[in-house]
Image 1 (cartoon, rainbow, N blue to C red):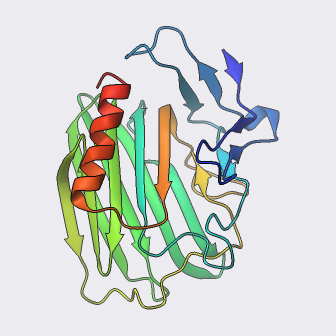
Image 2 (image 1 turned 135 degrees about the horizontal axis):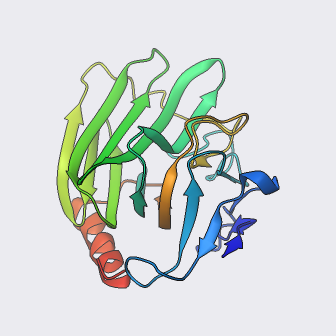
Length: 219
């Protein structure tokens, strides 16, 4: 087991995730894994990583309005813990919040995207627990959730304001907690991959990526 100082971005864009406080660093483990591949272990108490760039697309946008996030992970706690978080600022409600948990033999994913008036796009899914490839994309006033190459949830909010939809560069994208400074609701579980596209993938594209990751991680 090794503590993780930095999770290096393999895209070449320099959007690494890091942690400089020793007590908040997750562990890198490569023995006794479910699928034989290494993972980052978050303890559910104080572990989290922040993206080194507050704006992963440059400028003041923070993250593209219509983006896609795909991850390979397994939650270990029944608490509704924060897996991924990004907010515009402490004074503006625009934010992305992805929670990830398990209870007995079920896994739960809940996500919330808020506009400037606190109107939300929500997705809510539960299924059989285990190592899985999840992903979502945002498109206009809709959110679409996929698991293991199958769309499992979609939701549209006609009143959602996506015309002024940006998440700013005041704070970083946070993996494993609900905010980048003095975080709470820390995630407990294993994370093997996180991919962020600053565009909306088509349904076929997201299925192709998930099929590749299923093969890569023997899911």
